[in-house]
Image (cartoon, rainbow, N blue to C red; front, side):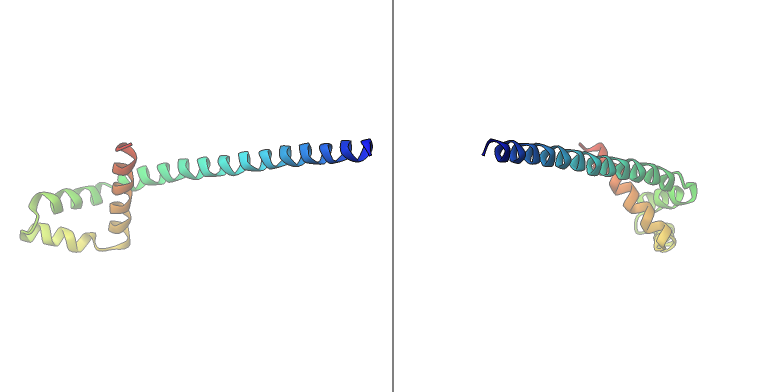
Length: 94
């Protein structure tokens, strides 16, 4: 009876230790993906052409220049720029 109790305790302890190691590795993966996201956001935001278009779009609003800038921003690159800009604003608000 004593051997069974020792065995059950050993299994419980080893299982909890293994579960603790698994949760740490998933946390590291989440942290790494956040760092990669930050790097990719900064790379996207360094695009000078998109930055110029965004500035024109916000500065000139509904004028002809602003509408032309809006049309040029309606690409995958422009949408990625806006998503990165929102993500950076969201991260700095914390």
